[in-house]
Image (cartoon, rainbow over all chains, first blue to last red; front, side, top):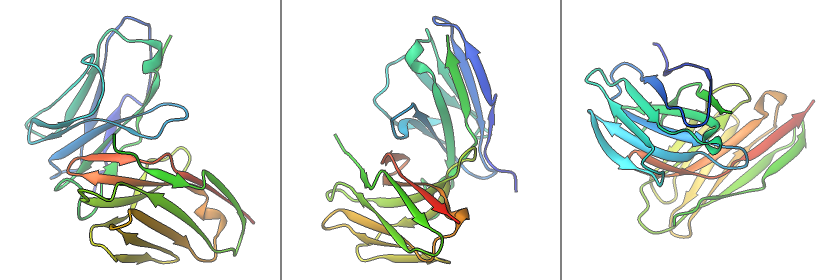
Length: 114
Length: 110
C-alpha cells in the first residue's frame, strides 16, 4: 500500500514568489491535513480538507491556502513568500479524522525562502 | 489558546534503561490524544490514539496511559534500545486538527 506522497521534497524560492506543494494521500483516505514545522516550534496546524471541503483552519495568514481534488489529492499554496515561511511542510491523511488509527504522514517538503 | 506541553524536552539513557515521558493537555472538550514517533529523516509514525479516560495501550515495549480528567498522558518505554532513539510527539486532537507538543527527544546509548 503506497504511503502519503509529497512533492517536491525540497524547494528553494525567492522572497515574494509563490509556491505550490502537493500531497497524495493513502488510497481511500479522504481527510488531508497540512502542518508547518519551523526550528524550535512544534508542528503547527495549517488546515484540513475532507471530501474537497476545508473543514478546519489554523491560525495562519491568508497567504496560505489549499484545496483538495475529487481524488483526495491536496495542494497547498503560499503566496508572497516571506523568509519566515522557510519550514518543513508535512501533510497527513486519515480515513476518518484520525480518531481510531491516527494520521499517516508524508516525508514532507522542505521549503527554503531566500 | 490550547497548549500541549511535553517533558522532558530531551532524555539520554543507556541501553536497557526504562524511561517515561509526560504530555499535558487541556482537560476540557477532550476528543483524542495521539502519540507519534519521529525518527530523523523520516516521517512521524502513529504509535497510539487514545480516546477514553483510563485508556492504557501497549505495543511491544512501549505503552501509554491517559487521564483526561487531569489532562495528562504518560508514554513508557521498557528496556530502551538504540533503535528507540527518536523524538516522541504527543498531540491533542480534535477532528482533523491536531495540536502538537514540541516533543521529547530520546537518545539511547548502546
